[in-house]
Image 1 (cartoon, one colour):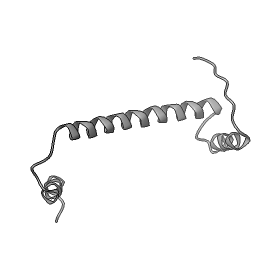
Image 2: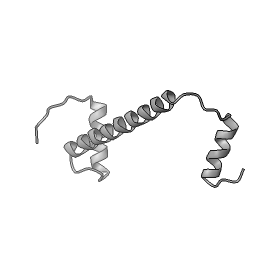
Image 3: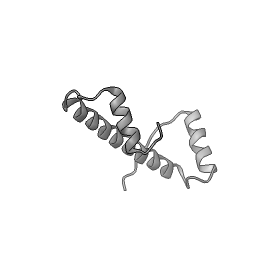
Image 4: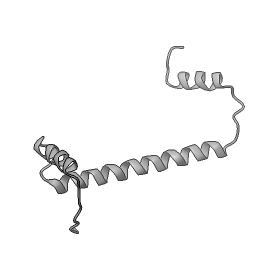
Amino acid sequence: MLRKTITVTEQQDSWIKSQIKSGQYGNDSEYMRDLVRKDQEYKQKLATLRYALQEGEDSGVSPLSMNDILLKAKNKLDINV
């Protein structure tokens, strides 16, 4: 592991301490590592979503109407219309 030094405001320090005091984290480092992991997961999900949106856009215009698309989706999910 690498050691990093960061600077936070008093308000941020109070928040970090409250998270540790709540029992969710053992120390500042655990909290910061969890923040980094969550940020990595978020960015990966966002990249996946952007890729899917681009893939959909690149696929062209659907011959189906919006109502047809919704009905198809509801049927797939077995939702009563």
